[in-house]
Amino acid sequence: MGTPDCVISADRLTKFYGHDRGIEDLTFSVGAGEVFGFLGPNGAGKTTTIRTMLDFIRPTSGAVRLFGLDAHHRGPEIHARVGYLPGELSLYERLTGERYLRDFAAFRGGVDFAYAQDLAVRLGLDLAKRIKDLSHGNKQKVGLVQAFMHRPDLLIMDEPTQGLDPLVQQTFYGILDEERERGTTVFLSSHVMPEVERVCDRVGIIREGRLATVSDIGDLKARVRRRIELHFDGPAPRAAFEGLSGVRDVRTHGDELSLAIEGSVDPVIKEAARHTVVNVETHEPSLEDLFLAYFGPNGEAPHDRGDAP
Image 1 (cartoon, rainbow, N blue to C red):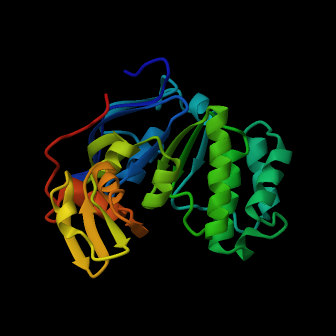
Image 2 (image 1 turned 30 degrees about the vertical axis):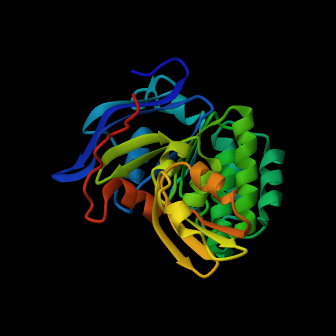
């Protein structure tokens, strides 16, 4: 199962809680240095997948390997190389941020604490405060420093930017870019579509415990309709756009033309270049649009599965 450069490899991974489904028959892999996004509605099985990968819970059947090692039998070796941020972060409230992180560093056998302090400064985290006195966003920063500070080979993060303000989110993305350049592999669960587009190479979509698809981020976006508004220096040339490949739902109002496009925008750009355009506005698809593209308004399964080997 997996290849030498495969950091995560799941083979028919299944977890049931009694008669209740957790995840079922998940098969996917994540390559070394890849940033892999894991998407799905609430209750789809994202957190169950992560907890099974880390051997916090045992699978009902199937198997998962990290760094080629069995997640159950080689847990200590795996955890030494992993930075983990849970979706439901639980911290020791009576400790200061610094005491908490130093204890974690000692637990890991020692880390370069100067790097942890640098991360805290960049994220705007006051390590002298007790954790119980921190806001939700600042508690999340403590969790981020804990996950990054030992420079792990694999980062596993469940909704890493929840509670962070937009400026801190950008700092987080910058730190993640540095880890990517260092060769770190990242497995990131998120429900924020711009975040996924910003940081991920590939994404997997899970629904009702089953993997619907694994796809490059560009291929994924190409399946989803986006809306484009064009403003011309005269009456909008509706007829010129209605017959273009992938164009749907063309609407005009005076000098304004609005359309939906599936796939490449190249035909629209080339046609627009034949006219005088004074303004262009694009509306990128949301995560909800993405789910609709795969499951339809009634929740039907997609016709083509793109599961990774």
